[in-house]
Image: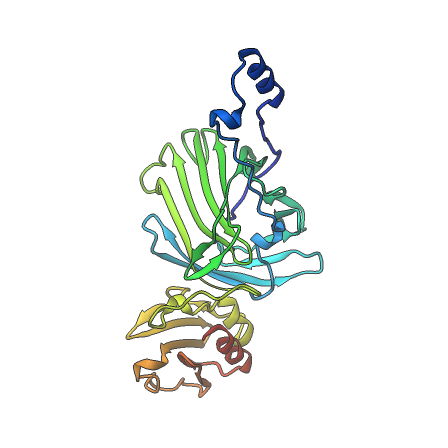
Length: 340
């Protein structure tokens, strides 16, 4: 939705030889399988869903996750635009630079600024045991990778209180030679779960052998906690409104209030006195956004108005919002659409 999620190539599906079973049964004069109680092999499960549904890329789609070694570090990212080539730009991923993707019924691909493929994220057919391979190019080194679709969920999966059918799990492994970025030859594995309509909902990364202390944790986990995705059911909010419910991105504030504005402090918001607070600054200008649960009885006391007189006060069913330093109606409309 969080570096990208993917690596891909050929499908491998070994099947038992039915004719050999028949010959052995005849030679040994054993009773038929149905009489001996032998279980027939389980059929391969297939998702039956177009690949692009597992990686939504509509303009304005956004996600919030919690991850890191302890599963608590917040991250927010979203699709800021889609160009005429169908390439979607995603800000807020693992790095500070934008990521670009193209998705259709057959594949999801990470691409470069020119739209040229870098590596496949997902690839049809979405059948259990389907496998694909590819190579990453990093610092002039080719890193071989494989991906295997290990599971198609037979029952609905609950994500942040919402139900999704036909979720899939992909296992990836990339093998780095000794050198950079790892002194020792290292295998980087990922288990990624995608649900149609909402995207990547859970990921676990492992490094073997563990990186040197201070470089990376041996295991990283990330899970989806909130989203605003076109056509997807909304997450079920908690009892109280908090920062996980406010999917405001720096690009939202920059587009409405000034491109020079940059986040100050936690870009996903900080909890202060019962409010989720976002701060931005650039040149002489400062913008502050405060969001509080409307039911706590303190929504009118956000503090002094901004020094330049530009401010917004908004109200939704659950949220009270105050913006100091920017009164652009585009930001007001966006905040109303993001909050319940």
